[in-house]
Image (tube, rainbow, N blue to C red; front, side, top):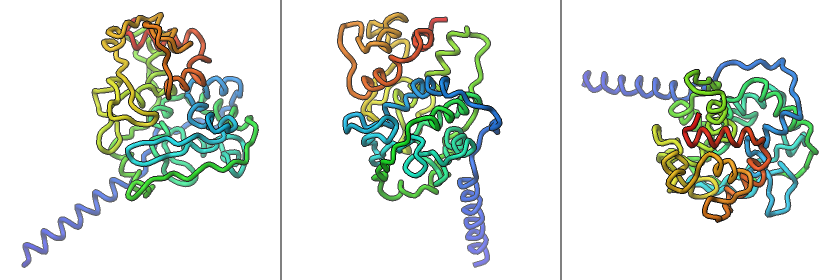
Length: 293
């Protein structure tokens, strides 16, 4: 009897320990919140981060950044929220600290944010960039349209459970350049892994929705936000007839090397995002994906 009591005690203590670990806060390096943001730079970063196509219901005639259409995933249907400067329906009442916490740590005023919002990638941005985006969003025209509530069933609708997901899969940090590669290559890698979050869509996910380590950019055949995504590794792109110039070109106009046109979710990404990047950024992304310095 005494042995069973000891075993039960160990199980209870172990369970408490696991619970404490899984619920502990997950935060990255502290940011400098005294920086003054530049709304013009921030407006470009909004395009670089593909915020417009997700947070705008284009097919429904919604105002820019006033909330997106349905984003269907294996875990339920999500609706990108209104991120205009409206103080009630949007994020106009948010402080820079609250916005930074959402971007950097996946934590909003209402609690943990679902990783369908790619904070795993946005956390790589610099302190100045976060301040710039905040300034740009606070300068948007306010829209009073309330966004729809997520349609997510149990247990995925329990936001506290996201603390465990973060402890298992999320490691917030800032981007660090690789000195063994060129500035252009590093810029491309930063966009792909950071604000452009190409890796978030074009990588396979495990049963809990986390990217499978070591398989980044190898495609997401199971489908995620926006549907299935093809591989965009150097090997896959080369096989598809791409070179640096054609990758940069397709990010601008959507035309593939075989004269097809990219539509669907990628078409929206190009129209609202990458077509409005600088030529230098498109070439940087193309160079990184094609493995060229």
